[in-house]
Every structure is written in C-alpha cells, then in structure tokens.
Image 1: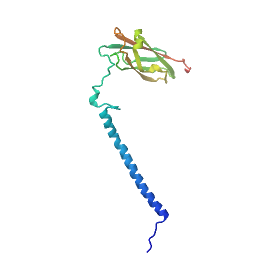
Image 2 (image 1 turned 60 degrees about the vertical axis):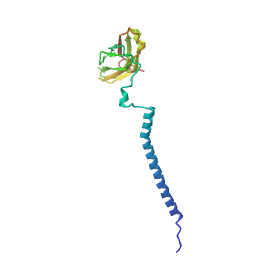
Image 3 (image 1 turned 45 degrees about the vertical axis):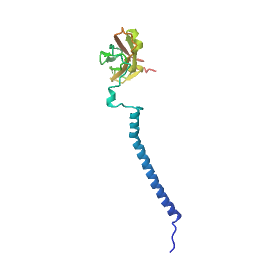
Image 4 (image 1 turned 90 degrees about the horizontal axis):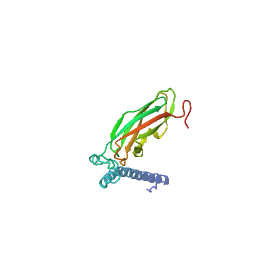
Length: 189
C-alpha cells in the first residue's frame, strides 16, 4: 500500500489547530502571570515602604500632621448675611480649631423665590489681620451659584488656620454676604 500524503489544505488546518492551542496556552499563562503580580507588587511595596497608598490600621494612629499647633486653640465664629430673597445661615455658629488643622463648616441657603436665581457669596474676616491666615481649600464662594425655584442647598467650606497667625488672635469671625447677580430676569455673564 502506498502512503497517502495529507493534502496541503489538511496539513495547513492541522498546523493552524496546533498554533491555536499554543496561543491559547500562552494567553492563559500571561493572564495568570499578570493576575499573580498584583499581590506580589503589594508585598514588595509594603516591605520597601514605597507607593503606600493606604497605611495599615496599626500605622494610622502613628501618622500625625506635624503642621497642627496643638498648643493653641482658635475660636472661629460663623456669620451669614443675605442681600436678596434668601434664607442663608451657617449650620453651626462657632467651632474650636487648632492652627494647621483642617476643619469644615456647612452653610445652608434657600431660594425663596419661584424663579431661578444666580448668586455669589463674598467672604470677610475679623480681625483684619486674620485674613491672610484663613486658608480655604474648598468654598462655595469660589464660583457663582445658580439655585432653582425654591431650591435648598448645603454648601461646605473646608479651611485651616495658618499656624503663622499672630498669637494674640484668639477668635476669628468668618462672615459671608450672599447676593443675587444680575437681578430679576437678567442672566449674569
């Protein structure tokens, strides 16, 4: 009997199947390798102390903000004035903070009109020498506010007092004046 040589098409199909099997094995190995690197990477970072995004629970108590001056306490009083048809007030009248310590206060505003209104808040500080030392990280006063008809909104102010504040300043008053921009029927530009 004569030996039959596979046809070129059959030989090609057989080679394609072998190549597909090899590629699938390589793909599975690559995926497994990439998946296995995550815990290895975390362990290496933990051991070396680099790229540590979230400290271990045992370390959290040891981390301190060295910029906070715990030897002093400043009373920050909050005030609100509304120029227009608003109800505007802070949720607390005062709080105690240490210089360098982050704090947050929330102001509430209610548009008492049945129309949309654009408004802006302007801060002022007392005593005047505290102005340069009152640092706001987030504030509704940074941009114009648009409130819908009868809309109520809570707006945060995140701040800290610079530790360079003169030692004789024990109380700071933060006051906001909230006023309509453009008036009825006018759109602010």
